[in-house]
Amino acid sequence: MGTDILCIGSVLWDVIGRAPCDMHQGADVAGEITRLPGGVALNIAKTCAQFDLRPILLSAVGQDRPGDELLAACGEMGLVTAHVHRAARHATDRYMAVEGANGVVAAIADARTLEAAGEVILDPLRSGALATQEAPFPGLVSLDGNLTQALLTQLAQSPMLARADLRLAPASPGKAERLRPFVEAGRGVLYVNCEEAGRVCGTRFATSQAAAETLIERGAARAIVTHGGDAATDATSDGAVSAAPAAIEVKRLTGAGDTFMAAHIAAEAKGADRRTALQEALGTAGAFVAGTDP
Picture 1 (cartoon, rainbow, N blue to C red):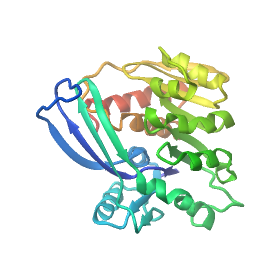
Picture 2 (tube, helix red, strand yellow):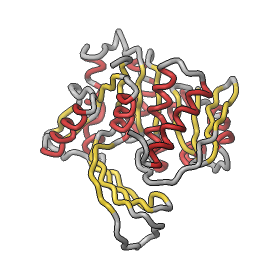
Picture 3 (spheres, rainbow, N blue to C red):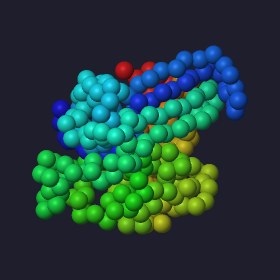
């Protein structure tokens, strides 16, 4: 494995129900229900591992059988789990979603163990296991919006990540506003879709370019915005570049944004320019959504 990346945030079990037809509220249809390792941090980590990065997880799971099984699955994927906090009083977190051909119908994230752990999961960045206060971690770090608002607000100003190449994922539209302190502080690279960008900015956007440029105007150092099957945009104060994804048949959606983000990080870690990294990330995410990824 190559470059280290710290993946800080949710590590849990995904329980996903998928149906091949369009669904609506109250629908009762035949489909498939699967359980698989998930959570934003884990999804980013496993895709990074596929691109020969070395992901190190900082998260919390329960001292229970699902936690044991989850960490074993992470190890099989090449993820470093030695620094994951094991919570004695809480069960391993779970995420449940229902997907139809028309997209995600509903989802619930139970991240109470991660939220209760709070800044305990960051102890390896203070203890010397991965870094110290005097010698902060100098490499790639992904953070997600499943961390509490209080902890994210603290991290937006913390010297703990002063030397990090910080990458930020909102986790969901409902949690996107939690990343606002990073926009205001001008720290990190923000990965959002148009709806999430709208939540951060308090408005609606018709295009990824409008969303990305507005985030820059609001103070973001860099914003990468996707918009489903329409063009995605990477914006900084020096300008914006856009690229369109290929047309695909949608087979799955949960984890697509995390896959896009991880593929983009991996492309840049290998030296790709902004446009190439955007195109490669769209291609990887498209293969994931179409179910044709390895």
